[in-house]
Length: 96
Image (cartoon, rainbow, N blue to C red; front, side):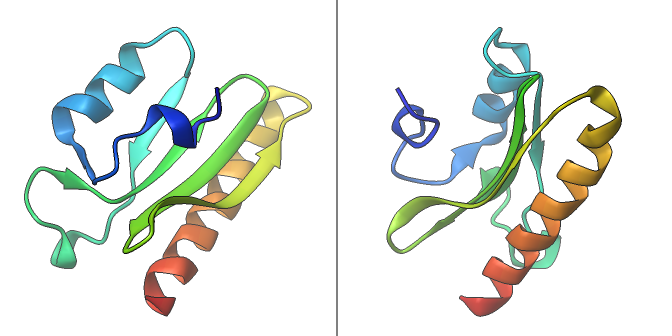
């Protein structure tokens, strides 16, 4: 099952984001939605990370889409991968 298959066809709630952080499948789930445009409790842009990859995702009219994926070789790359994916998410938000 892909990451997109596990997401509802709507923005996540804060509680759902918290449950992702508690799951065994993910190491990190971070809300990177624009604060000024965010409906309270809705997470429409996020970073997800496992030990082997980081993905940036955005929810829009067509549902969730992956805008960036970085494969990880070691923990030293995680910070750079998170930054790269966050930048891709911000660009995707600006394009909408």
